[in-house]
Image: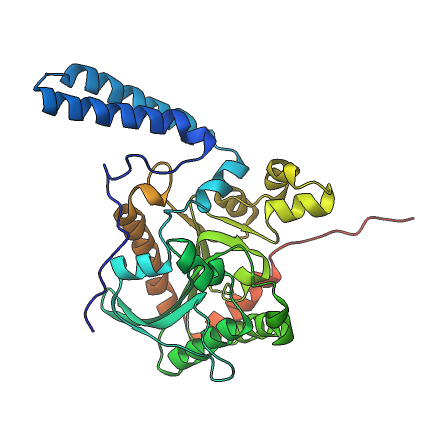
Length: 337
């Protein structure tokens, strides 16, 4: 099968007029000013190179200032950027011979999760990931990356198939949470996620999971158990969204920025807490500014971790996987005497 064309690749210089958040407005305005000067210089045959260089220097300094001081909520916003690369984008850029597999053999096909076989640096792997859309129509078709029970059952079916042939599993997580509809609940949403969590602990093949965007609640955990769990730099991983947390704790969704800080959901915070095993760096400002750089960083992290895990005996691997999650989160009981 021929390698699929990357329909969403963004490279340096491709981000003029790219949608941004409020804290990015000064950057976008300056970027557009530079582009306008460049066009004016060409159209009018006027040498504005000095002015352009000065503005580019100012832009570099401004980016460094803005992106080095991002709040947890601002990082959440970046993780949700409409142009952020999706699972299929990463598959198209860093993997070859992708063969999609569909259906759970029980109910139907869920387009919120893509599964299949692929090659990564010549090695055959199983790749599974949440898939959001590129526009409103596709987002509706893919339920905005919120999987149904059949999606999680499909994922486990393909994982088992891969394990049977000795293929390691790569999971790319990008979902605000599992689909919350009545139909999904009627078809056993909670059970499907719980069974995936249970069965991934027993899967006799290496598993590497990476949160590439949003890592929300049980929707993320349904394909999130792994020997190595990593986050992209501007991704987040949390038991609940900041908006949901704010609505429950303060009865006010406007408290989402406070909630984002309390939840400790950013990559740096989770790494410090020992919840994740590593952080995959992104281009300054987010993966949407340069798909290729983000993809190559992800590729390097996947290759290195899969190589390390391949050298571990399968029984030892399963024991370490179990111990890894037993050590996640500790609590102490106060003395009531």
